[in-house]
Length: 174
Image (cartoon, rainbow, N blue to C red; front, side, top):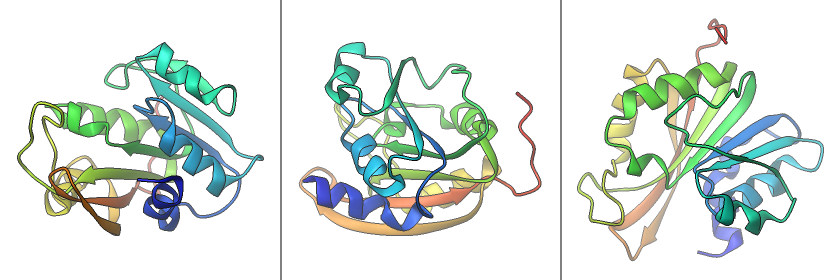
């Protein structure tokens, strides 16, 4: 995929310029850069990955945080979180989704990008279809889940993006 494809996958989930966002499992930052194009220079974007070397590819274009998104990161009051091709590495998704929901402001957005398959392979061990995502998101307390985009993929047939909202009445408990 090229940069325009990445931007197109998440565009409809990003409400406009500005805000505070995190890209969890950012790797070398391909989706971080797509997010930066959409939120503009007035936004604060943190790219999180366990691999410090991969994050260096961002070369100062976003704040970076070396960390494992399956553990507490100290991120709070975010307008949005992007998890592009990262959640499929996690077998037990519920605790991670609970943690992500607590990172978000009430009404904050979680945008996921995932392969449209329920069976993985050694490189994509735990993917999930959009239909499964709807159920997982609801069980984790997210609301208003909707499909954003779908594209063909050489790997596992297709990819999709979806957005879910943190409950509007929920408050971050730190």
